[in-house]
Each structure stands twice: as C-alpha cells, then as structure tokens.
Length: 180
Image (cartoon, rainbow, N blue to C red):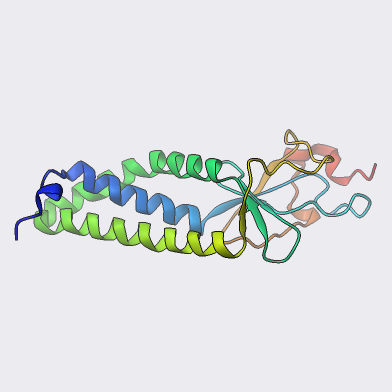
C-alpha cells in the first residue's frame, strides 16, 4: 500500500516525534508533582490550595471540589519540556523495534503516537469544558509567596494530600511548624 503524497515524505524521525509527543502528553496526564506552601494545613491561616504540575506548577484548585484554574501556556511549556526528556527513551525504544520489525515500526509509532495524542487531548478538552478554567496566572492569593512553593511528592492524579508529615523540613525548615 502506497502512502498518500502528503504522508509519503514522513520519515522515521517524524514517527518518533509523534510517538514522543504522545508519550509526553500521557506522562503529563498520569503523573504530576504536588506543590505546597509551608502553611498547607496551618489552622491559623487556613489550608493552602492544591497546586499541581510537572515540572512547573500550572494548575491550582479553584475553591470547589472539581474546579481548577490553570495556565495553558505553562501547560504547553511542561509538555515541551517532557518531550525533551522523553525523546531519548522513545528514540532508543524505536530503534530497537526497527531492528526487529522494520515494516511495522514506522506505522506502529505513528498509530500509537496519534492514539495517545488524541486520547489525552480528548480528556484535556473534556476537562477544559468541565472543570478547568484558563487564566494567565494562578498566583492570585495575597498570602502566598511563590518563593515558598515547594514540591511535596510525585503523584498519580490530582488528589491533594496536604498533611504536616508530608512537609519536609528540608524544603521548609522550621516554618512548617510555625503558627505566626
């Protein structure tokens, strides 16, 4: 079967690129970093909102149970950074597959990359229409300083686990226990 003229010029590198994009989107969807402030569970100041994003925080709990504000430009930057990280692994994996099944590798990479991209972007579009609200900045509370924001844990999903035991003194020092 001959590829259409527009697809005939695609190379193995294009196939690896599509596969890398799909993997980066999937990693970003499934695995993220939970960020917090020292006062995450401080009874004097009230709990801090949940903040998520890997490697840069871009999503903040908006107040209701399923409402999040997010910065689309930082989301795209995160996907681009994850693509840079994932690319060497995707390329190495693709080369191993190409040695074993040269005919299937090209089509398989394109198909799996497109399926991952379409699936993840479908979930993101659904989230955008349901509980994601785009903003230019998630830094809207006057008491929160972005210099104090630190990663708490790598997590699967967006469930907030603000707990005093999760706050490391390595990141926050004695501020984690202060009630000023």
